[in-house]
Length: 355
Image 1: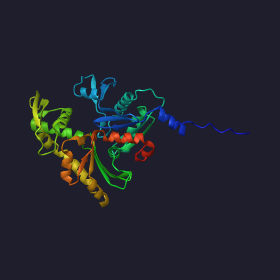
Image 2: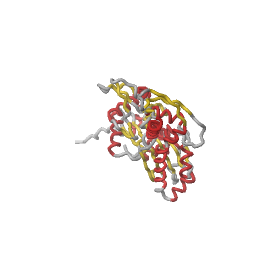
Image 3: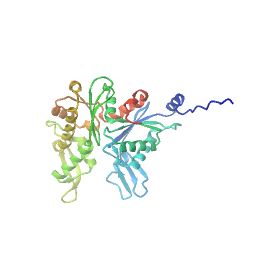
Image 4: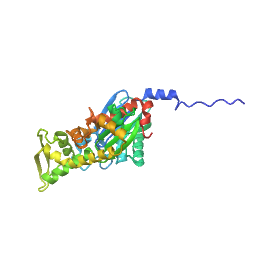
């Protein structure tokens, strides 16, 4: 008896892949401690929101996400709790992170689609297998069909247009909210990578701690962030900048305001700055002379929101003797990189560390 050939499965075939690409727009996500940025294939950067979620304290019902939740932080009633589910660049609260990603995907996917999208997500270079699994599970639970992970330092290099495919050593320092990633790249791969859990959040905590100890004023972590952004500077001879901060007097417990100068902020930031400089020294000590020559000739590329601090590039150049160059838009550098991977997933899939 003649056996008929089995029916070919459409799923996994080239036709299915082309149809899936047509019916759904793949996305890229920079899942950061401070901010989450989303890039949609063919549209560019479509969302940039703080990584903060507001929940009903009794039912865990999602009340607000992003900027709306950040504005509630520290001002909520007993019925509402605000959570930052990403800590040091990795997921600290799986359920809340899943809800946050699902909400953000719902916002950016404003059209009905038949096929769930693929996602490329930037993660720290020192991510553990458990943390990697948490990111993958959270993304898959949020409604994407396939997930690819890219080291944030590699994504920053791709987003900055560095010649990572060529036999040239390129060094990237990505200062995010929770981690500072230091990587040396060449020929499409990582020569050396090192990450420390000292970055923007640690700078905010250092400012908060210094003002409490030296000025007797307790301020919130977001007020410390506002101080850093408004008058933060590492330059010794920068023009004087002054701003008023608000908080609670440590001795009396009463509300109080005071004026701060950029000199106070410069002194407060010395400890996290020294930690970042030490990590850069560690990276430079572990490269071959040929790669060191390329870095000396081409400089070090600064990326991440922490690179926006005034005088940081100049201070790092002074400390190391190597030129540091800040990206034109350091805050979106990583998401531009993962976005480029999404746009060219077939050719750039090799830079991904897991799928």
